[in-house]
Image 1 (cartoon, rainbow, N blue to C red):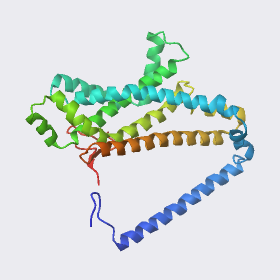
Image 2: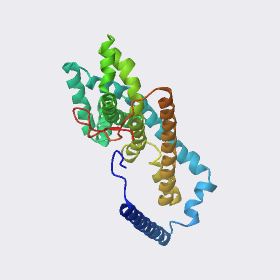
Image 3: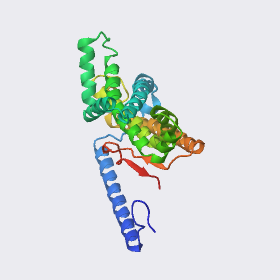
Image 4: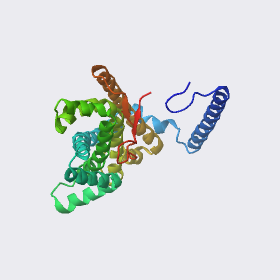
Length: 297
């Protein structure tokens, strides 16, 4: 019996897999023991390093909660702008008209090829030299600009791959009843492709939320990750601060993916999908849109 990706392992392969798993668990345990021992030697496991997060509410009200809210604000604004913009760019790449398809494709490939941090830095300098944006909100503007430009280009490829993953019979049936290209896209292809695109879209939304930390590192945005410096300066506990900040990121992203999984399940129940799923990494989608699209098992 075989699956889509590989043959079902036999007895020897199963034993080998268990052996590899055991070796990996042992190595992981040793690495964890070494890290904890090193932290203990440097007094990073002392109670006074961790107790402020439990005993002092000021560390939450002054640093962690405001930083988390700034992260959520920057991420939410970027998502609200990047999602519809990316959808429009993706639809533009599917246009039958070369005068639409070629310029849109150029824009998508251009912004997808530039590191998001560089886009943030360019945006910051543009706001400094050519606008009257106040300095206190300039980092937020720059971070949102970089995130929108980069992620809308990636979302455009997700949309394109999602539409191309649908069976050609969907388009043929729409043409047979006299629907125009715009009607086919709006009423037939996009609604069906949404289910296939959801996993990849959620992955990209998580990336947007995490990339806000770049603005805190280099542009002075008072987001969650940047609070590590202030907490460490006041409590001398950088390892503990980073651990708590990482835990907050995990909880927020887990909540986002859990909501998306619930939404995807509801979408699949309410509409009959095609079974196609767009992979999370669409960077390898070729000109024909074949890569990055697979069949659900």
